[in-house]
Image 1 (cartoon, helix red, strand yellow):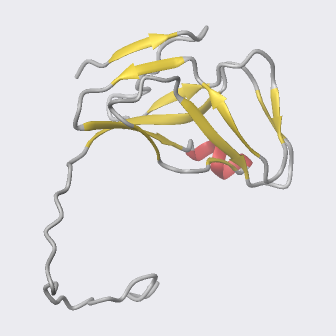
Image 2 (image 1 turned 60 degrees about the vertical axis):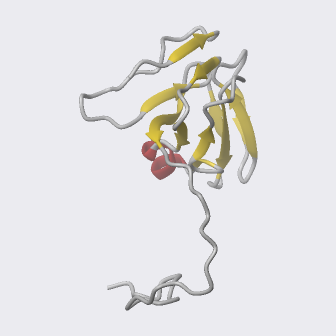
Length: 144
């Protein structure tokens, strides 16, 4: 699949690190380093603009290493870039750690996954089919 992209950053285009990678790393495109304090959130721009085909979305997801090692994650994970959006891709980062975290220009801050999606058409009914699970949710099936 080919996707149109404008790169106004000073960095290379996002790319897959391995043949089996689902996501491509997004890099911070900032003029100067930015320090994210504990529990603070901000939008970090990437300098990237894309044109997705209808029926696809770009999902902005956290990088597992940043989340596990530093407590930095994408606040609305996954963030969705719709096919009709033409603005700059931004990443809403939040610092869930107890320490300041400094973001440098070019730092890999999130990953982007291109995903196909379906459009739903609601069929309003009076009753749903029954299942063994029923209305149980939020851990109702146990933890072990």
